[in-house]
Figure 1 (tube, rainbow, N blue to C red):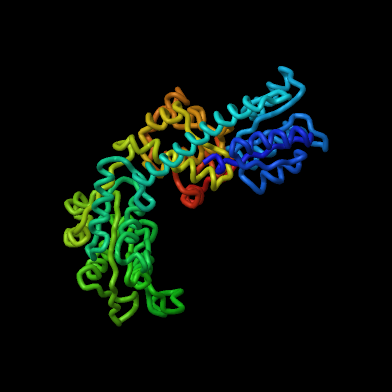
Figure 2: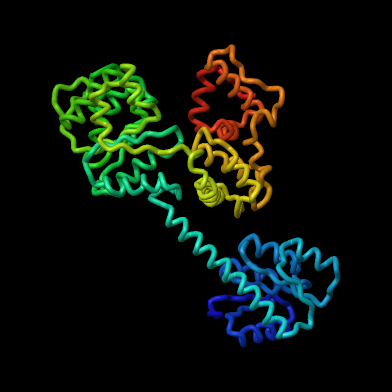
Length: 453
């Protein structure tokens, strides 16, 4: 078991270097040696050692402290023990401040070295076991790209598995940012259609005529600019799944066309006279109460019943607080890698701040919050102060009150402009604060004529 833990001894004195290596090999460890700091750094670049013994005073332009700092850049998890014949309080403080785990003085006692290594390895074993356990727990709560330990979400996972291979139409409801598209993808990739296309369409993003063309395609000359025949999303999804996001926003004309596709599995391209048959599973999603929309006459009741064959409702994040730490840590792990930031965890204070927030933007807002905190964080552990932007407006701006005399568009324009100024015109940071995509923010800047400072 000990042989799995590798140790590197870096010392310019051959006698000391080989003696220490010999003692450690007698204890059963795999030990390599390096005669200088530069050689030690190169070895660390090639091999991930569990423990590094580094001499403090070495010739060649790079001493033990510098060697240790370079090694820690390469191997942040490494345990480094500084060895020196020149023991002073100042050197000890410097070594520990820069990241040394231990500080020992020459001549070294073999028994002391053995006990030290045993203690370090014991801690590393516990850390490894904890990491394995954490991954297992994450796997336990993970379903495709969804992550939740909430009982209601676990019921959603079970239902998705149950209906994944059916042809039945599925309607996913829930507030914006709850993960409706992730559920749609889980449905597709859990079933028999997983090897076929998954095609998504945002129904809210397109005008009626454009949406018709997007869904059903068009013939050459069907309208100005239609230079050639183009397949629509239904044809592109043949054999697979089409995901219709924000289905509650489609026009009455498109509702009729969609109803026909669901009933007959056939449609006409825009400007076409030839029917196109498709084998496609339809998954729709909306944050709108479609039953209420039917009552108000804004949505066809027959289309609603066709869509609502299998109903899946996603609870908002505020109703599943046990998921907040789980999701936040998952986002932290992924985003720290993507952004090249060395972040390890969230402090208790940070978790407390996250749990206190209401999350009107749900999981998407939480992801944006973690990214924003990570971008500005100074340490490896995100603290409560890194999430200060989540504090209620009353806490951060005592004199502010909600404007009740302006149209909603004017309020939105004012908030966007103020947030952009506060972030010195940084669009990415502003989008993170507002909880929207950068592309959406650019569209709103253009819509309202807001110029970046």
